[in-house]
Image 1: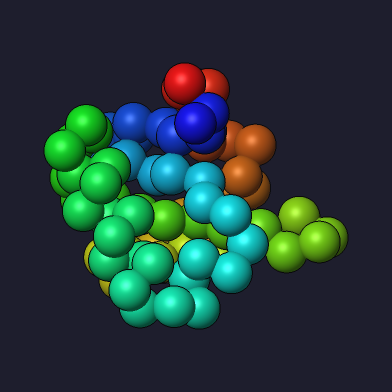
Image 2: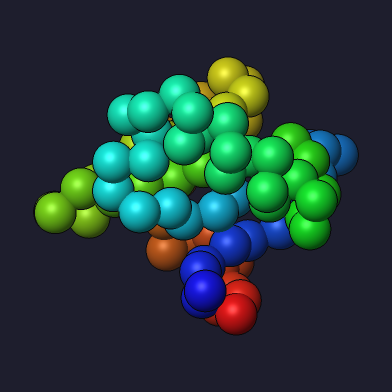
Length: 83
């Protein structure tokens, strides 16, 4: 399974943003499973991001980090491909 993720350090806080499939954020069980899975491999907190068909991102996770991410363009996130 290949996916895109970014480990970000901002204002002294390290967190991970993971791109997930569209629809994942709509189901609490899928969100929780994804966060639990990625927490074993990456620094927490984990923020999930999905994009709609126009590329507009939606974030899920710690509210202060989500607020921060909403104010930057996804291209500013240091994405890396993992497999």
